[in-house]
Image 1 (cartoon, one colour):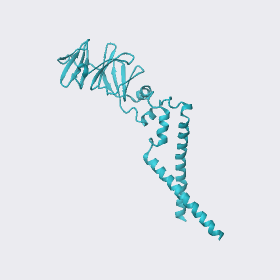
Image 2 (tube, helix red, strand yellow):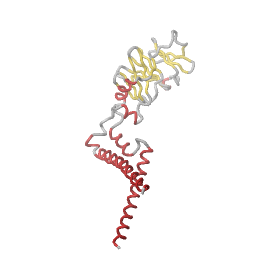
Image 3 (tube, rainbow, N blue to C red):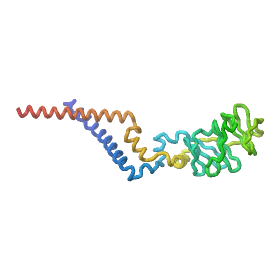
Image 4 (cartoon, one colour):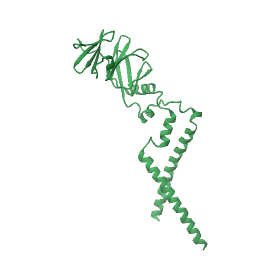
Length: 242
């Protein structure tokens, strides 16, 4: 009797667990069926924790210069609420007049106040790469290995001695907790749609692998035990009629 009670107790709680799992499947499946009507593929997530849960916002940094900031979140740059795609990691940044300069390992970008790339230099333009430092004064300076180079207004690149008076570029920093709450939704505003969220949850890509596996095993157990109980009861009923 004790074993039977324990099995009933287990059966009850496994039933509750699998019921919640089935409800989640039914609910997400129903919403996915209505994707076009609800425009779920055109509505995007702005929740920070949900973006982070889906793996966005893992790579973040800020470059600060005299009260101005340019942010990089994953493969996007944010400046003055304008977003620019940039697949490479920015290692150095500097402000020259009204332009922001962003130096990756393989290229140097000039960005205007609207966060638009107005020029780009790379090895095809004679830029020595990889870049190891950046400095600005009346000219632009970049460092490759141990050699400094000067870039003039015509984008002519010439070897030069090291800049005098120290290196002048933006301070590289991490995002504060408050900045993450505002910067991530702005930078990633068109990245993760709600139909993608629902599809991944429905397919079991998001969430605990162990929980999904245990729930699936519990559902198999309930199904098999239910079938066994059905035939046992049917057999007992036949014997009682004999």
